[in-house]
Length: 425
Image (cartoon, rainbow, N blue to C red; front, side):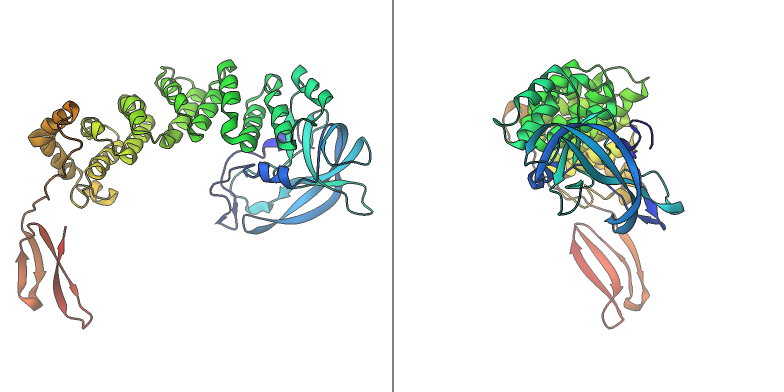
């Protein structure tokens, strides 16, 4: 048996490679906890007295492959039954152990397999025993064991019982009252994930309470990111303040900021974007500026146009491209105003200068009118004009054409002869 916390995590987010095939591109553990709770015929709360291997193995299909797992068994001393009935207070539970990935594993896996750890308290979601069997099985191999702490509030809940609650809310209440007893980052995040999976947006108040009490920047970053995912507008200001804190020497802080900045994309309200996201374009961290520019591009805020123009001079090319595309999409212009990344890389300065020239000639004045309320939004810039484009097509006697507001494409026709077609930009 690995160390006390060993299997709870298997356990870093990574890419599982079996035979060179990616089995895991993005895996969100416990996303079906609410469904597993609803499916469970029996839900018990208890302390694990022992756990050991049975010497047996089984196979399960996971990530498109048949994987071989060890089979383990544990004894659970039941403290409370939240749903269903059990035969004895000491209950046997059978569950999966570590999968056998063989020698073809390219990196560590993230399975979040459930582990019943001796001495710890768990909520366990079970199927009823089959006839003749002396053990219960988990409803879901990956989403059926919920670790809880042992605070006084948990003890009171266990003594009261679940009569006044449905099982899901009872389990969520046990989780919410466990947090003061959870010391490690992995335990806390696992429990917070479980709470959000069960309660969704109703977990916001609990998340904020844990955020106020936590001193761990990793936990703060995780909670702020989750609050953004839950579209809690009142948390945007706090997330932005966290991103602007000047403490870049600590890797844990940097990693937490990366997590928070990733979920800025969940901010959709334009007034919120203008108030809190626009200033992040001046953040010293490139990854924060990049995420902010992505939000501005998505939001299409006319009042953010001056900031997008300024972002065209950012030192990070990702930021420059998002600002350029944000300008193009805000004003509903594509083509030579909003190229793809490949074209931008080939001739970046041409596209950037086009927008800067527009800003100097008419954009600044239009922006002032927008602030004064004289116009509601920016008009679309005029179509870009281009120099004569050389085209070599001797079979047609065509050597040069003038693009102007149109472009000429020369290629093979269905009859294998060259043809020219005019396409609008």
